[in-house]
Image 1: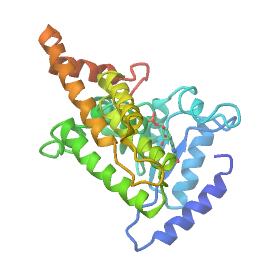
Image 2: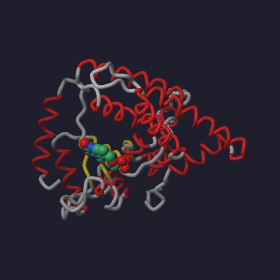
Image 3: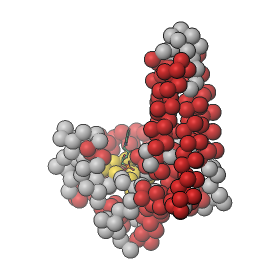
Image 4: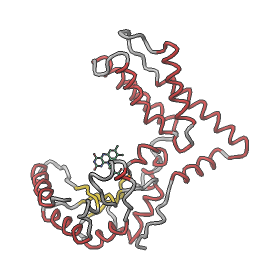
Length: 281
Ligand SMILES: Cc1cc2nc3c(=O)[nH]c(=O)nc-3n(C[C@H](O)[C@H](O)[C@H](O)COP(=O)(O)O)c2cc1C
């Protein structure tokens, strides 16, 4: 955003290169960067890109402080300003604006999509899709009007993911892209991360059980010695952790904490409505 003309030229060239291919070109940007953070600069940035032919913008609703904050700091510290995204949508009704930043669940996305007579062209969910994926399990039905959620249960999602992970693991270890020993372990740890997050809104127990299970399987010789055939341990660890989680959930239910209700309550604890954000009605 410090060099809007360069962004204009890149966008124009991308649109030209995509002509006839059916590939849409959109631009993702922030509200500003460093001291280029005025409303007037933002409006002229969008206008310039609209002149290049861009019609869809994804706006991370905070500014960035380059060289001052880390990448992570730039995703949390500068305050969110949803009202600026709505104001852009009002100022440029012929363009489409997708709001991004801090949206944590389907309910919050729906609230934003409904605000101001549905002026937004979309909502983008970043970290929550990775860190608490289950809060979006119902999004296909709730947001996109599909008849039902595509995955009935976490157990089913887990099974399907483990199938994918096993395929990836064996393809990469066989092709040498993940060499036996440390390489295979690192790949398996990377594949474990999405599994550990699948139950994250239920508390950290599942994640701990999963990672501990993997470590124990390795420690007990589950991992073939260096040079031997690689073994996929994540499946065993994940299924054991899932069984432990299911048992804990039914104990909670038996103790009157209500399995389904408890799950919903935890889901809503994850869902942080941005009440501090002033939204148009
Ligand atoms: C690990 C990580 C990598 C990211 N990489 C990119 C990227 O390459 N390009 C981009 O525009 N945004 C990137 N982002 C930012 C997200 O797209 C999003 O704008 C930001 O996380 C705020 O949305 P959220 O609060 O829903 O996560 C990244 C975020 C994370 C956590």
